[in-house]
Amino acid sequence: MAGIKARAGGLLLIAIGCALAWFFLLQPLKEAQAGVPEVHYQLRAFLAVPACLVFGMGFLFAGAGLNYRNAAEKKLTVTGWVLFAIVALLTLAGYWWFQQQFSALGYTSAV
Image: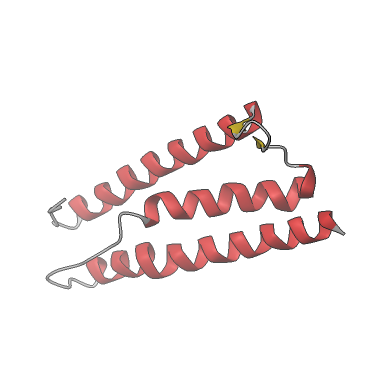
């Protein structure tokens, strides 16, 4: 039963990640492509989206067996560090790509 809950939680995380990407990243990009004078987006979405998608897929495929942390010692396992490294790489790559798209459209960042 715990495995089914973990897999359902993984699906929920993937759905949340897709919704966050749509509303906070893709919509502002569509606005920029439409030529809106000023576009606002959420920097937190660059971390939240990859985190939801990576951990969602981890729970979807591994279920409750995704051993990413040691609860007794309050430390990440090797699997947890690998997952967070993937999240960090996707965050940086996504932010870079997003900035390249905005630059190509003639926008400058105020961040």
